[in-house]
Length: 357
Image (cartoon, rainbow, N blue to C red; front, side, top):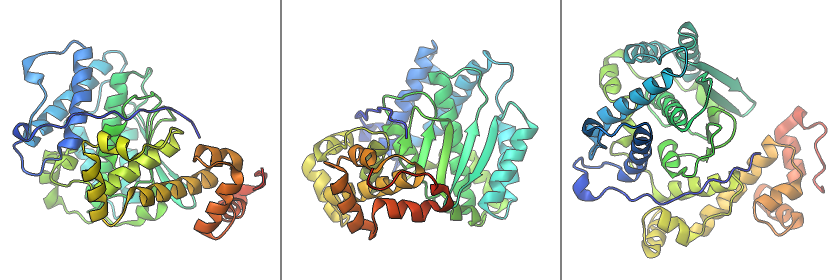
């Protein structure tokens, strides 16, 4: 597991006067606008017509225009241009003809192969309990601009899959490319899942069972969806505080950084400490419970996905020693870490280190 340090910084939300669409999730909207606007300025684009938007309607057009301008800038440094909007539409319509999400991903991959290399490469990896959707843009060089464009591409595929299924895809982890990013909070808010930066490629990881979810949309619904694609997330759906806190805690554990405390989380989420605690209580939970759940989930993931010694995992998760971690894990799962790992990794556990290491 790579230990890439990512610092979550607070981004000032848009004020109520700046947002004239009821229900606009400005805590999602503002940080991404800031990142994209900064990338435009870095490339020398300061024209008035590309000023950041102040509402959702403006954002949809601004977002698409900004990504297209960044993509066009990148294409000048490589031998091929980006997909056109009409080609994106054809790919989405093709996916709409699928019976389930697995078939939809396969159709998207086949369409991308027809446009090679302009549409990049799409892959689907199947594991016993989870699946991984991978996106490779086939860029000769990676830059901050290409990173942002490719993250938005990954996000677009997520929005397509969720729309096709008529439900949220239960993401377990999102990988946002090889660059180390100093601010992952906008992407936590985008994907609503733990985000890893500075690792391998761009990918969505989710339970394998989700591939069998049927496509429920009809061609008649497509025009309204594509008109604002992929900006649906910026509408009135607002993620609960408990989900945000869980995602931030799990992301910190996966990235090997110190777990943020209540004061830090409240500050990062733009809340007073008293309001932060009150809202968690209203949601039927609290910081300690969410922290324990995050540590438990991270422990299971580390045991399932790696052969690292238990002592290393215990240290990363903040336990005083391996013995205290084993006691806690036995209380959580009714088995020692070594026994649990062997049961959940099956035949792949050959040669793994013993639980006592």
